Length: 307
Image (cartoon, rainbow, N blue to C red):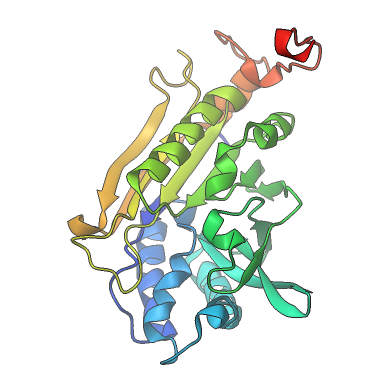
Protein backbone atom coordinates (compact mmCIF):
# COMPACT_ATOMS: atom_id res chain seq x y z
CA UNK A 1 0.00 0.00 0.00
CA UNK A 2 1.41 3.38 -1.05
CA UNK A 3 -1.05 5.64 0.73
CA UNK A 4 -3.47 5.26 3.61
CA UNK A 5 -6.32 7.57 4.60
CA UNK A 6 -7.33 7.79 8.27
CA UNK A 7 -9.95 9.83 10.14
CA UNK A 8 -8.83 10.92 13.63
CA UNK A 9 -11.80 11.88 15.83
CA UNK A 10 -10.82 14.25 18.66
CA UNK A 11 -14.07 13.38 20.40
CA UNK A 12 -15.64 15.59 23.06
CA UNK A 13 -16.27 13.61 26.26
CA UNK A 14 -18.44 16.25 27.94
CA UNK A 15 -21.88 15.74 26.30
CA UNK A 16 -23.97 13.11 28.11
CA UNK A 17 -25.30 10.07 26.24
CA UNK A 18 -28.32 8.14 27.60
CA UNK A 19 -27.07 4.63 26.90
CA UNK A 20 -24.54 2.54 25.01
CA UNK A 21 -26.84 2.16 22.03
CA UNK A 22 -26.89 5.92 21.41
CA UNK A 23 -23.10 6.12 21.77
CA UNK A 24 -22.67 3.30 19.26
CA UNK A 25 -25.09 4.97 16.85
CA UNK A 26 -23.03 8.16 17.01
CA UNK A 27 -19.89 6.15 16.33
CA UNK A 28 -21.48 4.41 13.36
CA UNK A 29 -22.55 7.75 11.90
CA UNK A 30 -18.90 8.85 12.03
CA UNK A 31 -17.76 5.50 10.61
CA UNK A 32 -20.20 5.86 7.71
CA UNK A 33 -18.73 9.28 6.90
CA UNK A 34 -15.23 7.79 6.99
CA UNK A 35 -16.30 5.01 4.65
CA UNK A 36 -18.04 7.45 2.29
CA UNK A 37 -14.79 9.38 1.94
CA UNK A 38 -12.97 6.20 0.96
CA UNK A 39 -10.79 6.24 4.08
CA UNK A 40 -9.43 3.05 5.62
CA UNK A 41 -9.68 3.65 9.37
CA UNK A 42 -11.48 5.68 12.04
CA UNK A 43 -9.54 6.28 15.28
CA UNK A 44 -10.82 7.53 18.66
CA UNK A 45 -8.73 8.82 21.60
CA UNK A 46 -7.61 7.04 24.74
CA UNK A 47 -10.52 6.45 27.12
CA UNK A 48 -13.14 7.65 24.65
CA UNK A 49 -15.25 5.15 26.58
CA UNK A 50 -15.23 7.53 29.57
CA UNK A 51 -18.29 9.16 27.99
CA UNK A 52 -20.19 6.00 28.99
CA UNK A 53 -20.00 7.20 32.59
CA UNK A 54 -22.89 9.54 31.80
CA UNK A 55 -25.21 6.51 31.93
CA UNK A 56 -23.41 4.59 34.70
CA UNK A 57 -25.51 3.37 37.63
CA UNK A 58 -26.22 6.04 40.23
CA UNK A 59 -23.88 5.73 43.18
CA UNK A 60 -21.30 3.61 41.35
CA UNK A 61 -18.35 3.43 43.80
CA UNK A 62 -15.22 5.08 42.40
CA UNK A 63 -13.15 1.93 42.81
CA UNK A 64 -15.60 0.05 40.56
CA UNK A 65 -15.48 2.45 37.61
CA UNK A 66 -12.90 0.47 35.64
CA UNK A 67 -14.79 -2.77 36.20
CA UNK A 68 -18.06 -1.25 35.00
CA UNK A 69 -16.38 0.20 31.91
CA UNK A 70 -14.79 -3.19 31.19
CA UNK A 71 -18.21 -4.86 31.33
CA UNK A 72 -19.68 -2.32 28.93
CA UNK A 73 -16.65 -2.77 26.72
CA UNK A 74 -17.41 -6.45 26.14
CA UNK A 75 -20.73 -5.56 24.53
CA UNK A 76 -19.34 -2.50 22.78
CA UNK A 77 -16.48 -4.39 21.11
CA UNK A 78 -18.85 -6.95 19.62
CA UNK A 79 -21.03 -4.16 18.27
CA UNK A 80 -18.05 -2.22 16.89
CA UNK A 81 -16.71 -5.36 15.20
CA UNK A 82 -20.05 -5.76 13.42
CA UNK A 83 -20.00 -2.05 12.58
CA UNK A 84 -16.53 -2.39 11.06
CA UNK A 85 -17.78 -5.19 8.84
CA UNK A 86 -20.89 -3.25 7.77
CA UNK A 87 -18.99 -0.07 6.93
CA UNK A 88 -15.96 -1.80 5.40
CA UNK A 89 -13.42 0.19 7.44
CA UNK A 90 -11.19 -0.56 10.40
CA UNK A 91 -12.08 1.10 13.71
CA UNK A 92 -9.80 1.84 16.65
CA UNK A 93 -12.28 2.92 19.38
CA UNK A 94 -9.69 4.38 21.72
CA UNK A 95 -8.88 2.39 24.85
CA UNK A 96 -11.19 0.40 27.12
CA UNK A 97 -10.35 -1.21 30.48
CA UNK A 98 -9.76 -4.94 30.13
CA UNK A 99 -9.68 -7.46 32.98
CA UNK A 100 -6.19 -8.59 34.02
CA UNK A 101 -4.99 -10.95 36.74
CA UNK A 102 -6.16 -9.77 40.19
CA UNK A 103 -3.69 -7.93 42.41
CA UNK A 104 -3.74 -9.30 45.96
CA UNK A 105 -7.17 -10.72 45.25
CA UNK A 106 -8.55 -7.40 44.00
CA UNK A 107 -9.75 -7.05 40.37
CA UNK A 108 -7.27 -5.24 38.13
CA UNK A 109 -7.45 -3.88 34.60
CA UNK A 110 -5.25 -3.12 31.62
CA UNK A 111 -5.72 0.08 29.63
CA UNK A 112 -6.16 -1.66 26.26
CA UNK A 113 -6.56 -0.32 22.74
CA UNK A 114 -8.31 -2.40 20.08
CA UNK A 115 -8.04 -2.27 16.30
CA UNK A 116 -11.03 -4.00 14.71
CA UNK A 117 -11.00 -4.79 10.98
CA UNK A 118 -13.78 -5.49 8.47
CA UNK A 119 -12.47 -9.05 8.07
CA UNK A 120 -13.13 -9.78 11.74
CA UNK A 121 -9.61 -9.45 13.15
CA UNK A 122 -9.20 -7.95 16.62
CA UNK A 123 -5.74 -6.58 17.38
CA UNK A 124 -4.91 -5.26 20.85
CA UNK A 125 -2.23 -3.21 22.57
CA UNK A 126 -1.93 -2.49 26.28
CA UNK A 127 -0.60 0.73 27.74
CA UNK A 128 2.94 0.07 28.91
CA UNK A 129 3.40 2.82 31.50
CA UNK A 130 1.02 4.30 34.06
CA UNK A 131 0.16 7.91 34.78
CA UNK A 132 0.18 9.00 38.44
CA UNK A 133 -3.63 8.67 38.58
CA UNK A 134 -3.52 5.16 37.15
CA UNK A 135 -0.71 4.17 39.52
CA UNK A 136 -2.72 5.53 42.47
CA UNK A 137 -5.67 3.31 41.57
CA UNK A 138 -8.12 5.98 40.43
CA UNK A 139 -11.30 4.16 39.38
CA UNK A 140 -9.80 0.79 40.29
CA UNK A 141 -6.45 -0.94 39.96
CA UNK A 142 -4.70 -0.40 36.62
CA UNK A 143 -1.71 -2.56 35.66
CA UNK A 144 0.70 -1.97 32.81
CA UNK A 145 1.24 -4.20 29.80
CA UNK A 146 4.58 -5.78 28.94
CA UNK A 147 4.35 -6.56 25.22
CA UNK A 148 4.72 -4.53 22.02
CA UNK A 149 2.41 -5.98 19.39
CA UNK A 150 3.31 -5.46 15.73
CA UNK A 151 0.06 -5.51 13.78
CA UNK A 152 -0.15 -6.46 10.13
CA UNK A 153 -2.90 -4.33 8.63
CA UNK A 154 -3.57 -3.87 4.90
CA UNK A 155 -0.05 -5.05 4.19
CA UNK A 156 1.46 -2.48 6.57
CA UNK A 157 3.40 -2.97 9.80
CA UNK A 158 1.56 -1.01 12.49
CA UNK A 159 2.08 -0.30 16.20
CA UNK A 160 -0.32 1.36 18.64
CA UNK A 161 1.36 3.38 21.40
CA UNK A 162 -0.88 4.81 24.13
CA UNK A 163 -0.48 8.39 25.38
CA UNK A 164 2.27 8.49 28.06
CA UNK A 165 4.17 5.67 26.32
CA UNK A 166 5.00 8.14 23.55
CA UNK A 167 7.35 10.01 25.90
CA UNK A 168 9.90 7.26 26.59
CA UNK A 169 12.91 7.00 24.31
CA UNK A 170 13.77 3.50 25.55
CA UNK A 171 10.53 2.22 24.02
CA UNK A 172 11.06 4.02 20.73
CA UNK A 173 14.60 2.71 20.38
CA UNK A 174 13.00 -0.75 20.31
CA UNK A 175 10.31 0.38 17.87
CA UNK A 176 12.99 1.77 15.57
CA UNK A 177 14.19 -1.78 14.92
CA UNK A 178 10.78 -2.98 13.69
CA UNK A 179 10.47 -1.26 10.28
CA UNK A 180 7.05 0.16 11.15
CA UNK A 181 4.94 1.77 8.41
CA UNK A 182 2.50 3.44 10.78
CA UNK A 183 2.31 4.31 14.48
CA UNK A 184 -1.01 5.34 16.03
CA UNK A 185 -1.09 7.15 19.39
CA UNK A 186 -4.50 7.46 21.08
CA UNK A 187 -4.11 9.90 23.96
CA UNK A 188 -6.04 11.77 26.64
CA UNK A 189 -4.28 14.76 28.16
CA UNK A 190 -5.67 16.81 31.04
CA UNK A 191 -3.73 20.01 30.36
CA UNK A 192 -2.04 21.82 27.50
CA UNK A 193 1.30 20.77 28.95
CA UNK A 194 0.40 17.10 28.54
CA UNK A 195 -0.86 17.75 25.03
CA UNK A 196 2.41 19.43 24.13
CA UNK A 197 4.50 16.60 25.59
CA UNK A 198 2.65 13.86 23.73
CA UNK A 199 2.33 15.68 20.41
CA UNK A 200 5.89 17.00 20.46
CA UNK A 201 7.21 13.51 21.16
CA UNK A 202 5.06 12.07 18.38
CA UNK A 203 6.53 14.56 15.92
CA UNK A 204 10.06 13.71 17.00
CA UNK A 205 9.36 9.98 16.69
CA UNK A 206 8.22 10.38 13.07
CA UNK A 207 11.60 11.92 12.32
CA UNK A 208 13.51 9.37 14.39
CA UNK A 209 11.80 6.29 12.94
CA UNK A 210 11.20 7.77 9.47
CA UNK A 211 7.61 6.66 9.52
CA UNK A 212 4.10 8.11 9.72
CA UNK A 213 2.83 8.82 13.24
CA UNK A 214 -0.85 9.60 13.91
CA UNK A 215 -1.72 11.09 17.32
CA UNK A 216 -5.02 12.31 18.74
CA UNK A 217 -6.53 13.28 22.07
CA UNK A 218 -10.00 13.75 23.53
CA UNK A 219 -11.55 17.09 24.43
CA UNK A 220 -12.80 17.66 27.99
CA UNK A 221 -13.89 15.16 30.62
CA UNK A 222 -17.19 13.43 31.52
CA UNK A 223 -19.49 15.57 33.71
CA UNK A 224 -17.21 18.50 33.02
CA UNK A 225 -17.61 22.22 33.32
CA UNK A 226 -16.49 23.43 29.88
CA UNK A 227 -15.50 26.92 31.01
CA UNK A 228 -13.06 25.65 33.63
CA UNK A 229 -11.94 22.21 32.42
CA UNK A 230 -8.34 21.99 31.31
CA UNK A 231 -8.61 18.83 29.17
CA UNK A 232 -7.13 19.49 25.73
CA UNK A 233 -7.61 17.45 22.57
CA UNK A 234 -6.53 17.57 18.97
CA UNK A 235 -5.06 15.44 16.20
CA UNK A 236 -2.02 15.41 13.93
CA UNK A 237 -0.26 13.20 11.42
CA UNK A 238 3.51 13.61 11.42
CA UNK A 239 6.01 12.44 8.81
CA UNK A 240 9.80 12.46 8.45
CA UNK A 241 11.21 15.88 7.61
CA UNK A 242 12.80 15.10 4.27
CA UNK A 243 12.57 16.61 0.81
CA UNK A 244 11.18 13.32 -0.53
CA UNK A 245 8.28 13.25 1.95
CA UNK A 246 7.46 16.49 3.80
CA UNK A 247 9.36 19.72 4.26
CA UNK A 248 7.95 20.43 7.74
CA UNK A 249 7.01 16.89 8.77
CA UNK A 250 3.32 17.76 9.17
CA UNK A 251 0.90 15.91 6.89
CA UNK A 252 -2.28 17.11 8.60
CA UNK A 253 -3.06 18.85 11.88
CA UNK A 254 -5.96 19.98 14.05
CA UNK A 255 -5.03 22.73 16.52
CA UNK A 256 -5.40 21.96 20.24
CA UNK A 257 -9.00 22.22 21.36
CA UNK A 258 -10.11 23.12 24.90
CA UNK A 259 -13.33 22.04 26.54
CA UNK A 260 -14.56 25.65 26.49
CA UNK A 261 -14.47 25.55 22.68
CA UNK A 262 -17.10 22.73 22.73
CA UNK A 263 -15.59 21.18 19.61
CA UNK A 264 -15.98 17.62 18.36
CA UNK A 265 -13.84 17.52 15.23
CA UNK A 266 -12.55 14.81 12.92
CA UNK A 267 -9.15 15.33 11.30
CA UNK A 268 -9.36 13.93 7.77
CA UNK A 269 -5.87 12.67 6.91
CA UNK A 270 -5.97 11.77 3.24
CA UNK A 271 -3.27 9.84 1.41
CA UNK A 272 -0.63 9.49 4.13
CA UNK A 273 2.48 8.53 2.09
CA UNK A 274 3.48 5.34 3.89
CA UNK A 275 5.13 3.94 0.77
CA UNK A 276 7.45 6.93 0.35
CA UNK A 277 8.37 6.75 4.04
CA UNK A 278 9.13 3.02 3.71
CA UNK A 279 11.49 3.60 0.79
CA UNK A 280 13.20 6.42 2.66
CA UNK A 281 13.57 4.30 5.80
CA UNK A 282 14.96 1.29 3.98
CA UNK A 283 17.44 3.08 1.75
CA UNK A 284 15.44 2.70 -1.47
CA UNK A 285 15.09 6.46 -1.89
CA UNK A 286 17.55 9.26 -1.37
CA UNK A 287 17.38 10.54 2.19
CA UNK A 288 19.09 13.46 3.84
CA UNK A 289 19.70 11.43 7.02
CA UNK A 290 18.63 8.03 8.36
CA UNK A 291 18.28 8.30 12.15
CA UNK A 292 16.16 5.16 12.51
CA UNK A 293 19.19 2.96 11.74
CA UNK A 294 21.54 4.55 14.29
CA UNK A 295 22.12 3.29 17.83
CA UNK A 296 24.39 4.34 20.66
CA UNK A 297 25.53 0.92 21.88
CA UNK A 298 29.13 1.59 20.82
CA UNK A 299 29.50 4.83 22.77
CA UNK A 300 31.55 5.19 25.95
CA UNK A 301 30.28 7.60 28.62
CA UNK A 302 33.03 9.81 30.03
CA UNK A 303 31.47 11.37 33.12
CA UNK A 304 33.86 12.96 35.67
CA UNK A 305 31.28 12.52 38.41
CA UNK A 306 31.32 8.75 37.90
CA UNK A 307 35.09 8.35 38.13
